[in-house]
Amino acid sequence: MNRFARLLDDLVLSPSRGGKLRLLAAHFREVPDPDRGWALAALTGALDFRHATPAVVRRLAASRIDPVLFALSHDYVGDLAETVALTWPAAAEPDPPSVDEIVRALAAAARADVPGLLAGWLDRLDAAGRWALLKLVTGALRVGVSGRLARTALAELGAVELARIEEAWHALEPPYEGLFAWLEGRGPAPAAAGPLAFRPVMLAHPLEDADRDGLDPALLAAEWKWDGARIQLCGDGATTRLHSRTGDDIGAAFPEIRDGFGLRAVLDGELLAGRPGAPGTFNALQQRLNRKAPTRRLLEANPVFVRLYDILLDGDEDLRALPFAARRARLEAWHARHVAGTARAAILDLSATLPFSGWDELATLRASAAAQGAEGLMLKRLDSPYLGGRPRGPWFKWKRDPMRVDAVLLYAQRGHGRRSSFYSDFTFGCWGAGGELVPVGKAYFGFTDEELARLDRWVRAHAVDRFGPVLVVERALVCELAFDAVQISSRHKSGVALRFPRIERIRWDKPAAEADRVEALAALAGTGQG
Image 1: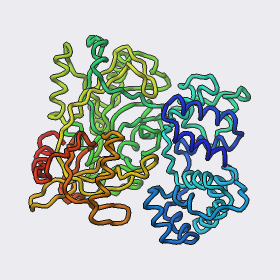
Image 2 (image 1 turned 90 degrees about the horizontal axis):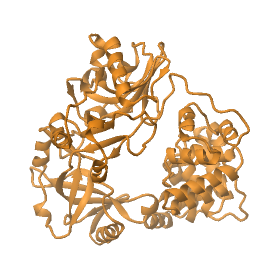
Image 3 (image 1 turned 180 degrees about the vertical axis):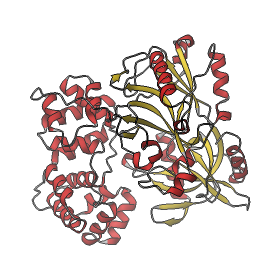
Image 4 (image 1 turned 90 degrees about the vertical axis):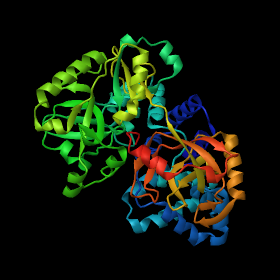
């Protein structure tokens, strides 16, 4: 456990990607099985201890720590795991458990057994170990490591291509002892993924001015960029699975897509609300996301469909090495054979390619994206193979310019990780019809470290009330928020919600009375901007 604690601490303090890769590779090389495999599982989100919740940790802390001291400490520190780690009575002689002991005990434990297990381990650990334990069991590992970065470290450790690890990843199980044996030359390579297994999706980079200078438009294909949920459909002829962009099986939430279709292919696409001729907003799609067993009423009231972008496998033939132009032709042929003219056309739609002759016409198309209900354009090199991850150069996303609104800061809450000592999570509001400020969105980023420090000081100096961890502040600070869309929302008192809001500028000079009104945002939601 001590090595795992040191790894987490070092990852938090290492700002560079290269530094994190070196730390990960060293840990995987030096720590024996199965602890290194459980560390890998924790960092890639493959562990879930559903009974070890923050609420359990708080109740456990209340049983050992003076509640006033703990409340004051938590308010100052901001992070639950760190607060408990620092205030828990110190072990007389630390006797740290292994990560394997912790994982296996929690996996077999009933709900009632979890507090006792945690208390016993906390009593055996020092402060660093207690912090790592609580981060591990609650899944709050905000250390700047993505699943792909961890797998990149594995590729460097074994001197193998990252694509080989990505290809087999979703067929592997923690603690990955067979994977490490292969990487160290002690065992065979993992079996290739079958037709129902998830393939890592190919992602795009934002288009920058420097990219445009080096790109010949004649070598590109253009499509609309839709605001849905990226998915992958996998079928072996008898069974069809629907995967999220991260490989989770989400088919149970969308039975009309998964069932009744003898798919024998692997298809890449976008899950959208509505019907092909009238796609809905992401807000409408959210009514269906994360529903394990949707009711018939929900299915009928909130239909969904898939807009297909690419074909990875056609039957048993792997097409990913083909250039995009060839894969697009195969996708069109597949759609014509299996979908066009059938009832399946209501749930499997083909993404349109957009004609253009140069950058000026592409810019015009991009400017009209809002009227189409799209976020912007996707630009794909015609000669690009399908490469999992986010390779630089083959695909670009050219999103439309963001919309902006001047809003008033209403509430503030502490952040997480290195921001846990700062108020960095903000709720903003605009003026409603009744003359009051009503919330329209939350923003967590867009500011520099210097601006964050100043915002934090302002929040502390202008707090007027508190509700648990949330501070209510004086209605006096205006920020310009940039956002991608406006959605009508019955869950918000304002009736609207901003999509991906971020702080563009802090208007220290602007009075709150001059902030924008909700009516202006609601009008945007009805003009193709939402």
